[in-house]
Amino acid sequence: MFRFARRVLPLLIAAAALAQQPTPLVNPEVRRIGEQLRCMCGSCVYTLTSCNMLSCSGAESGRAKLLAMVEKGLTEEEIKAEFVRAHGVMVLTKPPAEGFNLVGWVMPFVALIGGLFIVWWVIKRFLQRPATAPAGGDDELFSRYQSRIEQDLTKLD
Image (cartoon, rainbow, N blue to C red; front, side, top):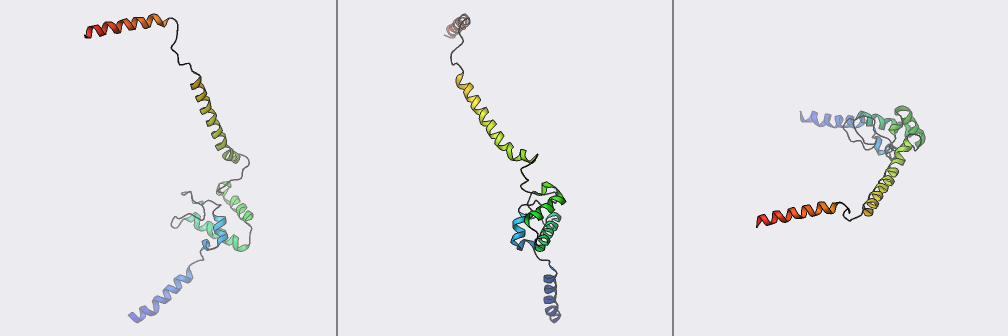
């Protein structure tokens, strides 16, 4: 029994090792380009290279496709164009700054400048307010309240 296990076990291990496909992430070009592409499985927000879900269909197929393209000798731009053709612009982690995507690049700066303007305006209005009491007809009201307070204080004694 043990003799059989000693002979068969190494064969099974060798067969399992040979059956494994090459890991695409070993190739540095695949890692570099994969960081610029999103995993398209639909349930994560990682890049193609950094997706760590077990048996992720989007990452595994994307990595295999990316490895095949790199081994064919396609350039980075050709690979990105192919992924964009297959999945749309949303596959890119940094969409091009053109058309509606330009809003995503410009809006943070517009919001920051707008927020600073509002803070400046509020501070300016706060500092310009007069700190004096209103004048005029309120003297009569003030004297009525003053007399009422004095009456209440005498009742306490």
